[in-house]
Length: 298
Image (tube, rainbow, N blue to C red; front, side):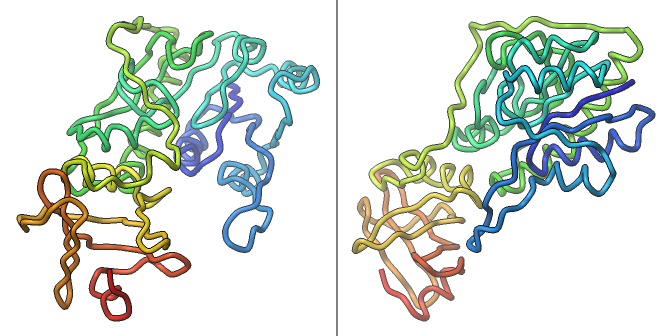
């Protein structure tokens, strides 16, 4: 089977690795244009483009997904299937091109958590279980009929980074199973129940700012869901502090009150208290509370 793969980040690379090991052929990869990355702001390719270069797979980086030139390029490739993993929203003029259509790998058990940040919101909301879904692309985002699902447990110690890695491995397997289903012609599609849908909107700066009037569990889950990136934060004396790891505490403190020992930092919330375990002062590196207290005070 000839496949065109659409993707950008490392979670998509896991899928490409599994596809490269299969009998199917990835004939082209579509990814975003090279962008500035890191503090040095070097122009670097996406992880998916880097994979394509290393495996001699043609790369397409369209300025517009609706351009006639891009659609013509895809028509000339004459692929059987398009696969989308962590990419932009495709127009119907693109996803309807291949005979077997196009499917997307989504980081939730659809219809739950439709939107840009399903992995983060599952943690932020304190869920114990999430998963991945492959579904046929349709006009409305994340609403297409479902091919396959697989559950993933969210451990108490998981943050966005660790859960992302677990889901990347599971997702790669789910993509391969979906491709095999399509190749065999033994296709089973399940419609989504829109009444069970819940949103997973893009993570904004406003969402990342901590409010210590909220309860300790909610703040703790927010920190987990935003770590290591983009990171939850608060301001103190006009300085920006990111928090990467916390633990629930039995200290009796009022909301926003800070108590420190020689090695520990505690902060009160609207209900309960938290211990701050990893923190990053503005312009400095990420550090443990113990390291922080050797040179800073709150």
